[in-house]
Image: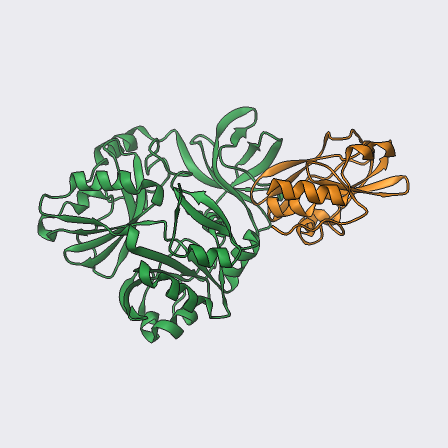
Length: 130
Length: 364
């Protein structure tokens, strides 16, 4: 399986990514995750204002194969949900690092990135899962 | 160890996701399940269904046991016709659902589910008349389903105009690629389509010949599941099993109570008593998908269980089938589905979910 891993993103073992933009961060799922899930059919909208903790439940995602959980790669407060996913969840398949982002948070502690992988480490990690 | 069909290498070359199904290593999709389902309803899809079982039975029709073995009348049925029916046990419970092909006055082909092949063989052979012959030809048959509104045009190019004469649930032998093929106008998608049975030595050549047509794309079992469910077609192992009878599933039209068959007595008795639960279709209010074995609730009360669920790319919502209490209202009745990750609102709907497909297409 060919997996696209982008530089400048941090990755979790559960295959979420986070991209820090100032005090905020966008969250999505990796190319590995979207390929494994297959066609995405539904993403549960996250609630703005809700606090999330690193590696705890962020939202639910459904695909043609199964319903799965998405975990927050960093702690913070949800500031936005990608409403384009309401009618077009396939954006996660088409552009998992771009238009298919899922939620945005106000980052509580940027130091938590030490618990995540950079692109090189994540590439190695997914290669080991094959 | 799961078996590979003779087309295994074709699937690998097409980068199929392969997964075990009923003891076989089968293609689930070739990239996108939803795209494959949509392509089937707008163009033509090719499915490798070689895991299915085929039996040839030869028996004198004047002393035939065939009508006692299956629920449908197959002895008075015309040659070159197919019929859908059931194989039951003495308790009227479903051993399998099958399609019977009348090949000659004294010859039938039964097409059965892969997972039930051996169980079916035992049940049938036990009941056949002593001078009947039984042959399991499954190991040497490749079965390809060509389905979609464009399927007739594709097949006509290869087989010739003769194929136009096939009516719904009719079949014929065709000479093709130097071999003898059975082609029936049947399928499991709700679209105009054909099922092709060919000696396995010619399977790859047939697959490649059909795939050369640019309208044809391969489709896997994932799309097949969506397509059959959109039409409200049941699947053995989901809607049917050995705990259920055809009456539980509302399949009366595939049972001939006027004749003697195994399980009839039990069904007559069940008819008198009534069924506690019945099989229904339901649609979700939204994009969430009900899944096999989710509980169905009516208010706070347990009201049944989901047997199949998919996301329908044609209705853009979750759909499913399941058994619900007979007391529950009919079409339009509100139900809740407990997914284990929250509750989905749904309502009972008339089947099939999709109407006006190309299935009954006729040039005449």
